[in-house]
Length: 185
Image 1 (cartoon, one colour):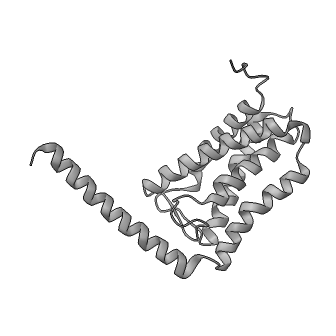
Image 2: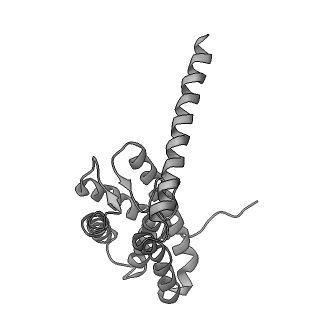
Image 3: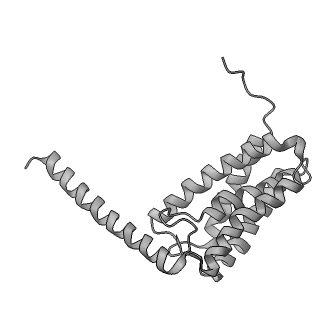
């Protein structure tokens, strides 16, 4: 067996083990999680903040805000997957069983919170807003979800999240303040 065949063999064995564990995770989800109170909690946190935002956002800024929110979603999902894969944290009671992220956090709570902060006092200091957002998510949001047993910080401290959350806010602020886009040609 040459080196390439050996590498292919061990990768395929690893994939088979991962697939078996994912199936076990799906079985656990179906047997214990779906329709449980914490699952419904996640479904509610996935939908209700967006419904509230629909009624209370600045309609004239909708496109700009949604574009910023989408950027926040992408960043949040990527960082959440990396943190999960590197065993820094993991989630229980996922709304969707096969994803390693907590979708209510990544697709709703993070972006909607930032969207509200962006539109509240739009001329206020982005630095102060970033600090507020980072402290809110790192010292209230994360501990709350850990207390609820949805989130487990295995090798992570809430303080580590502060600079990351600030950067996410700064990126959202930057995206929301773009004046124009070049024309498609």
